[in-house]
Image (cartoon, rainbow, N blue to C red; front, top):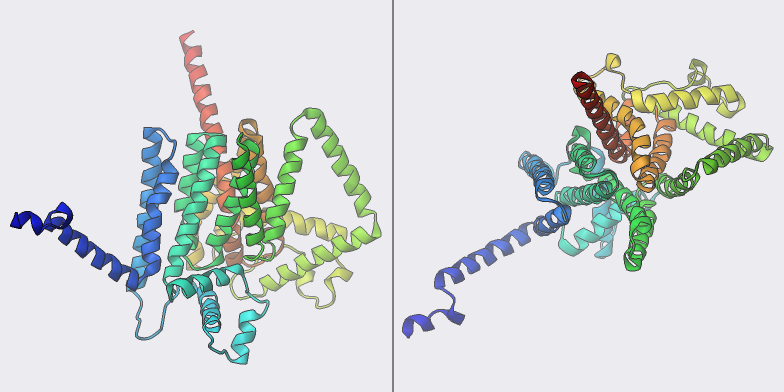
Length: 463
């Protein structure tokens, strides 16, 4: 009787002791880093979501890829944290631009708590340069959970993983398991994408919101349940509204991509619709360029792009030219001497540079040389994406057009407004996580074609 009464609620003393120790450790961990605890609590949800509805073999591959991706990111962030000299600086950054974002978010927290800023910091905090919704998100998070200059990296990882899983599941329904796994692997392990995914920069938030928009729009069209379609539409609309705060051009790329996808999907449903659409586009284009007001606006838009490109060429780093040489030596108004032929060459070179730069034989730094293996992989992905546009359209025209619409507008914005190799690589990586799903289905189409030809040759040999 005495022994049983010493066990509250009938639990063994050892179990109670383990529970007490676990509670103390959990409390200590939450006190040290609430963001880390929240991230660890999120992981089981992400793993359950990623493998929901999959077969046993496919489930093992998804869990393996996701598990290795999470472990690699946690290992990289742990090494980064342990390498920091906390006595010489309050916090370290992986990439220089992170300091601006983290500093601005901490200023917002200080203002919310009633502290004052000096005039220069106040202007920097609320000025137009570099301001985005990411600083606001980090400010609210730190207001609720306390300072998290290193926890911000875990928020980025969480957003990147959510975006990757959302597109993987959408691609699986559209293109099949193999293409979905291929795109999933590239998004998780491509070297530069890996770096952006653990950084406290805009890239993870931009990818997460882009993936949410595309997956939500595909669900609106594909789902047969009205509540699901309504929920997906609301989610996609919220993502479009939120992404406009991340980058200035993001709203035009994301919303315009949806419009272009709807137009492309409608025009390619029937052959006669496609013919009519092409005729209308050509006719409208010829009419528009002959209108003085429209021509002036187009000239102004290309002038802004050319001036921005020229500014990037002169920034520190390695530049590349898209204009003829005399555009880089004259200081007068570029619009006064930029002719339609110049615009044509500018656009053509910009499109080529988006794929080709940095050229392997023009590597001018150690970083560029280290990037060459990935650049070769990128060339392969770009080639397969061209095949994937056709192969994907045959499998699921809606999802394919959603990808193509976002890629075309995103690539145009990146290509026309850049002139620095480093900036191009970084900005191009905002489009790559969308392109890779087209590359994956293109690769599957190539493999299926090779297998079919091999099978035909064997039958010919037998006969």
